[in-house]
Length: 202
Image 1 (cartoon, rainbow, N blue to C red):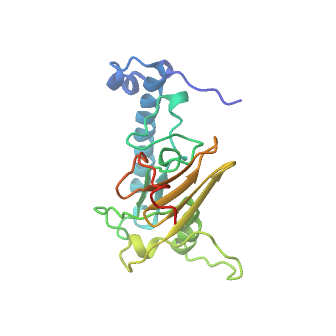
Image 2 (image 1 turned 90 degrees about the vertical axis):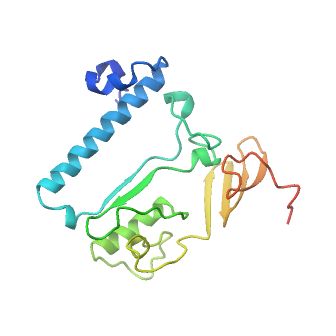
């Protein structure tokens, strides 16, 4: 059985930076994030120590959306949380590191999805796949290595039945679990506050 750890069970070094946080759930989450950060650092340190950093693609990402009510996470300025089709339930932190292959000082402002990891890893290790197998993801290596410029995805789709969302360019059309439809221009309204459905029915 999975048992959630109380922050008081964490070593003091994880708790001390958050002593002023009175909310128990928030305190626990921040302590866990601190522990995660330190221990990911230990893993990367061992990779460097073993001389493998030049030959190791490191990919870091989280599960979809912060479940704000259950663990005190915050998705601000995004609307919604885990299990919803608002941006707060979809967007996640995502980073790639490969010494000598990927520039460390770049941010690529594009829509990508976790489905892109499989073809990216295949390319990184020099493996091939059956061309008859249509992969939904794309190889991101040429993009992150600045070998070529392309749009990874013009359109993306999500479904948490009965809710769904479609992102096409900057526009996002969605249906919430309670049957509400919305259209939002994410380039101007990342918090999905201004519903454009009536103004732009086409």
